Image (cartoon, rainbow, N blue to C red; front, side, top):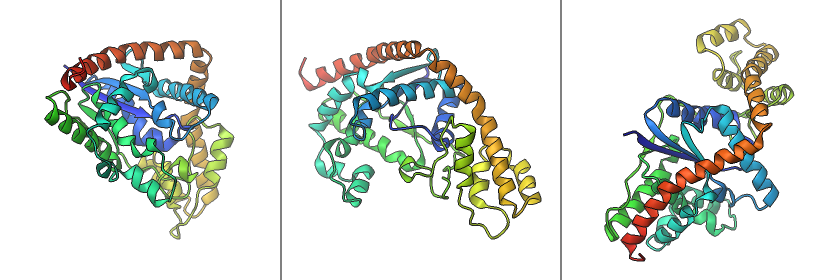
Length: 315
């Protein structure tokens, strides 16, 4: 039997090339490997921590579904669905809430980061790891593809599963993090890790003008003739040996190097833009795919919830 793989993405804005090269490209490769039964979901309830506008939520959710399909996540090969369509996610999170302590959740990275910024922390942010554990454990997930800085999410799911199994009975499988080797952190236009919160991104599916504006804004801080920030982004799109030759030949000519980067990114983006526009022209089909995915996911989730309810004694 294939191992179960699960991953979710919050619908909190346009995807950028860091999302693609740092995670979503690997999602497609894992799907196409034939080794996994894949669940990919839109984490709209997690997104509710950031989005409090009905129309924006609907738009961003549909946009992310379009993005999923454009990059190659295939509904005939994977199960694509919205988190909010499966009520078991939040129901299981509540059951976990009754056995998890506040000091334990206070160790979570998201909580600590919010606390450091002196934000008024909402309960959703505090409880984020519990809902994430429910997301993972509902589907007897074997592996969760994560970056090396996201291992804690899977560790929380394992801890919660172990505690439930110990208190009640053996109900949950313990998932493992799947860290794909060789996936580098994608730098933003300022040299820091690319992130929407830093405002340093190059958006996926960008127009030529948008690409040009972003690339021309890349910070060039090299004294050796090769702008490191430009080069580190460029090597995502061009073979490293070919790229090194071009940069050596044009050392110090930052305008030429950036113009070549614009051209190479645009060549990569153009077929994606066209494919996305084609899929977006029939949004009713996208919605039907999500509905079908929800029905398929719910079959597994409902069976797991029946086992959970039996374990805790409510049925």
